[in-house]
Image (cartoon, rainbow, N blue to C red; front, side, top):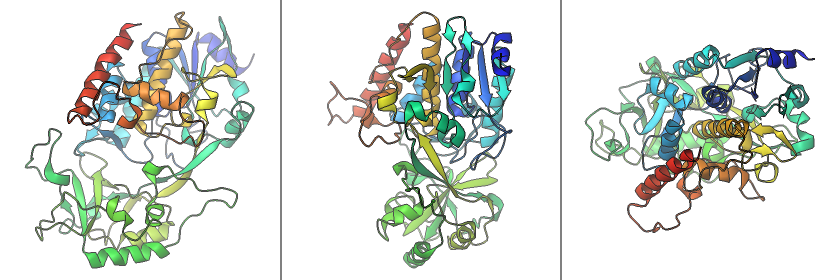
Length: 460
């Protein structure tokens, strides 16, 4: 008997979750709340990777935002549904929230600490800090056969473990993800950078009198073109010769966006719409926005400024941004490879591996993109395992008219050809009886989604 098998037997484990990121943490929480004894395995700090920095669960490595709080948005509906599932991730986000306009942004450390402490203290959760190199290590016999194992190793799955899955999943798909820099707030020149939200509106669309949650670094036309000229010629971190750089559209580095044309950033992260520079009472030609990473404003992330520039080039180029001439950085931007499987051909509707149903997948490795989405898929897989352990062999997923149902369907029912990572958006949700020209379309989609999610939960 292996050490892992003995640990599982001694703790009466009913399910195993590999990876304590957002998906794995939420999956373990859902199982534990349902009364299931769960073994949560996390490789850090024994083994780390190029993006994570510490041992805390659910560490946020790209931005600190969990998307829009607007109840009529698709992310807003997904948050509501996760609230119905008593999501640990959302509870932690509520307790660690920092101002960010319409976005749900969090203090990273407080957020991860809350999740880590909750799981480590739960009587139904056994935490094991150990690296797993091969999926065969996770084959553990239970009373009903092999224990269900959830692979929630995220986009940075270790090469040895990923290789062990190749007989089941074939060649791993991948794309490159870029991380935005974080600036020391005390080094920002606030005589130039100004606090303001776009259009100065709150969630209800009403005008607000507050200064705003974002710092905006305004460019003149001359400053913008000088910045673009230098950016085009700056040194970048290149992928290995044998790797083709494939970027996820929603998290592209600024250099990749710039390849579309010199003005392309004006329609992306440097767009100035809805902003007025108080020094000129006019709209800037371009802006770089900074969003709080913590309540006190000690750290600010550069919104949409994911980058693959070399570190010295980042310091040189970002000193050209008005207000950041003397800025110091808590973290520079970086580039890393993200792994995901071809879920439509490999997984069933409960995200079980068709060729080895004891293996489940959750989070970004399934081909969803984003913190909120990873959490949602983790919650879904946890719920499905609990239902199966209660005797329901093939519990139905939520209707596609719900945000969770639409997201899960995009994973297992996505296109067989050119399958790509997907965020939650209204484009995944069928209109059916809702008129596409209805001015209240989003409201109707959200209300219908809430009704049908409640009906789905009532089934169990």
